[in-house]
Length: 392
Image (cartoon, rainbow, N blue to C red):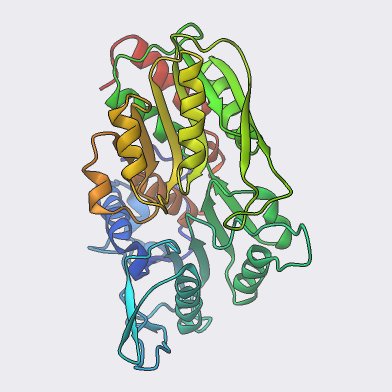
């Protein structure tokens, strides 16, 4: 059970959690934490009218988005949400779900998941006291800025959701947090997974030495520098960065091909290296960086990325592991993970369900989540316990 602040505040409203089909398993784990914490919580005021429905067997509200034979759909909430502090959990990357269009099977795309989210918001009909959307992988976050005559999909989606009555949007490791400028009068939080990554890495590799002589943080490109700098500062180890030199005269698969990786940083020889990024898409960039580090005689190489999309399959990571190129890959369970991925010897899943439950529980009491968004003290306390041999 998490520590609570001394001022135990009245909830904003009766807590309700809707996990869309794309996030069903994650939502169930989040719900289990909330049920356990609130049933164990001792507080004299929880029996008053302000805390009606505070302790429940489940906070999950049943919903669905059934489809007609034409492929059209509707949102359906099967319980009352009047006066509820409602949290909607959705994974727009879950391609495992299918639906039928005139007898043909379609895999659900991010567009389909986003439409289902809007359908559920519309089904609430403005009756919820407050609506918060938890969208770990921010919809269209890779289309966040305009470089030519093109659409700004992420900004449009954020504005559309807030216009429908969404009060807050919580995402994880947004590709570019500045997209929040599209909704300046609403709450937009981008959450980092730093603490959970460090904790999982120390658990699966308990022989790591966290000091400048044995460990180094590396950013695979300039875009990931902010994340890498934070890791480097809290762990008090050196930082390196690769600069991607691209051929801007050519476009292959919608992007400019990388010509070379140039490294900026201290000598990596013999050191364990942790590569930090927001997502692994095809995985080509991560493996190229690992190859460059091995050329410089780096020791073990670990890759940590919030979202493991693995859009081109897992075979290249199998080969990288078998050849000794990469020792471990860590990604979170915030998005869909194939069963095949979870069985790989090179893979470590980082569970984020407890963290999401803690965010929901804190927000439902209308308390500050600043300490949760900046876990520096918790990380340093974790490292101290690890160095003393007290961490398990």
